[in-house]
Image (cartoon, rainbow over all chains, first blue to last red):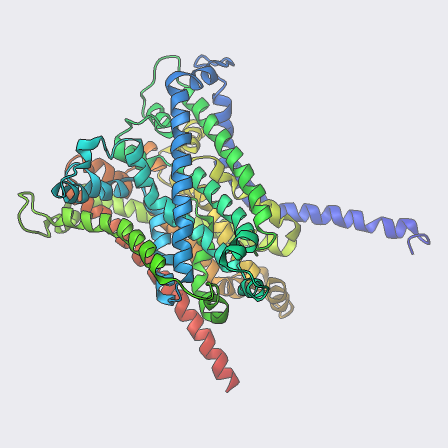
Length: 298
Length: 289
């Protein structure tokens, strides 16, 4: 057919393809406009602003300020806090999710699933209040511990420091991990386990050679997601410490609140660019890991 | 905040009812109860003790002796509280409407007409996660025209961006679960227009996906602090923050209320979902008998 009438068979498909591609684009116009106006334009404004001096010219000065001194310290602290509050709650979250998953009680699972949804979204000021009432200087647990003879505040603990913030972050990070990892646990087919034990494998063998390798990319993906979540968190740390701990997001916030040294108006944007770069790298690894995870788990 | 897995978790109930045999055999062949008990007890304590502490704190009399409900009864009369709550609810409604009107047709369209773009959409809708809200709001405040900056609905438009990953994931999961093509073709061949096909055929079939999209959006908007505070609008979380300086026990009471409110909304939604499943199961049984 194609040899008999090349122009007949060759012509229509490309034209149809072009037309359908155009028609396809038409349906995506509202979405594209929305994303462009409210995501791309502001993001580009931040990125360009990072290279602008207050007088309007181009400069590297903001970047250099943002990568030195107190701001470099802010990045280091942000990344340290994100690492701590993604790995520890991530691992604990897997353990909790597995404990819930293997308990055969349906109601428990349902309660945990809903509770995780609530706690994972819980953050900011209300969360700060919960913990001030718990571990603040006159908090309930603090009082319990001092009746036992160990007041943590007398032993160097403070809720308003790095480790205090890390404990508070766990309150929404751990449930987040439970939510992320539960579908992956459910994807482990019982028949794999049965087949393994039919071939004489014990529990260790199963997790070492089958369950572990299948679930590991999902765990890693969950931890990366937690990292991103901790990195961009602002409200909780701000509410808890009133900005006294030098995290990048808090530093950006203080720029926006008007605490600016003359000539450094755009440093906040350079810091923002830094966060975008770090989060972008993390999300790149996340998508790679997701690809790997979806090989066995649907 | 960035719980993509949450979307799947909201479908759990349905899966749980439809495939009990698959879910019950996931454990080891012999269950070891003691470590599970310890893990669940510790987790329970970690999550419940702060709630208990906050509850006690909000109920204690300032003198430290005895309990009183005054912190709770005082909430409605606090200056600015009703306005802040009303603003938050309006924003939640506006964001939900924006998201549904924009994303339902778009994701149906992608599934139906451009299935080869689905992977691309997966990655493009995750982009908002890469840009932290605190960074996005800098750009927004810089480029937004004054007429937009003076209205709180700019926040709703930006919340749509923050909610996008969750909304698209929910709708995508919902659309994957139904035979969209057959449904649409059937409706079209019976003479249904596009509008009525979308509204009367696709939307009812997409209900659980829609519900989880709505829940996630509402929860996000009701709890969002970063953008609202920097855009200088007093939403509920911003009000709690500003008010905290004045009265600790009332703020703690409001914080607890915010938590309970979210919980109730999520429970209500999953109850609706459960009822729907039970009803379909019943209809199926009736049809068979």
